[in-house]
Amino acid sequence: MRVAIFDFDGTLYAKETFQLMMNHLKNHPIHSRRYRKFYRAIMPPYIGHKLKIYPEAKMRARSVQAYLAALETFSKQELEEYFGEIADLMQNDFNQEVVERLKQHVSNEDYCMLVSGAFTPLLHAVTKELPIEKIIGTEVPYEADILAHRTPVIHIQGPLKTEKILEALGNETIDWKNSYAYGDSLSDVPVLELVGNPVAVRPEARLRTLASERNWEII
Image 1 (tube, rainbow, N blue to C red):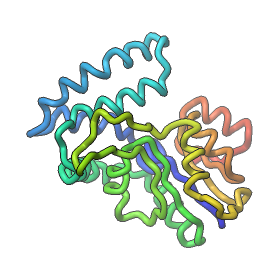
Image 2: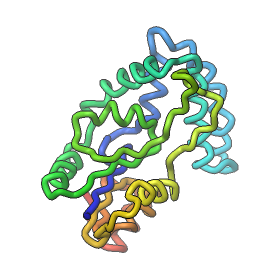
Image 3: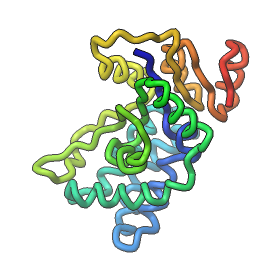
Image 4: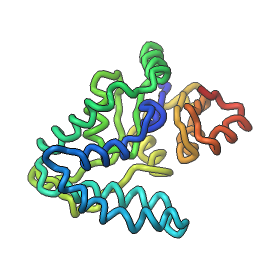
């Protein structure tokens, strides 16, 4: 079995999901008051990151946790509706070249996977019209269908992406040499290195340099 693995932010989706999520909360007609709590929570790790004394991965994980904490009291239905609002705002910002690659992989009977640090229900909502067979994202914890905002969230990023991909594929025999992976940043390299056909999508400078050195495809 061949696989085609897609990153989301900056790859399948041309923009940054978390920035859109912050703006949506800040300007929401009902929930904007919750933004202040979120903002207070993320500022210390954000400033630490900018001062290069706090790791980026930890800063991102803290931000994801803080966002859910700001949405405390949401039911599962309310949260899915909220993510649906965000998904509607994202529809015009897909990278169409990558969408066409996805459709071609489906035509070639490749097993298409989406792997992202974004929240899983948001990923399902925004890609519901796309032929993706497996979505791996950051899961939202619930207790009795109410957001469990104090439960630690496992943010899918870095090496954990590779671990989750292999876990999802289980005992399947994968033709890695003829498989594809798409990513835009240096943090995507562990996933890109899994396959025989890594593709750098509008890559950041560090990934562009690496992709050029290794003769990876760049689009």
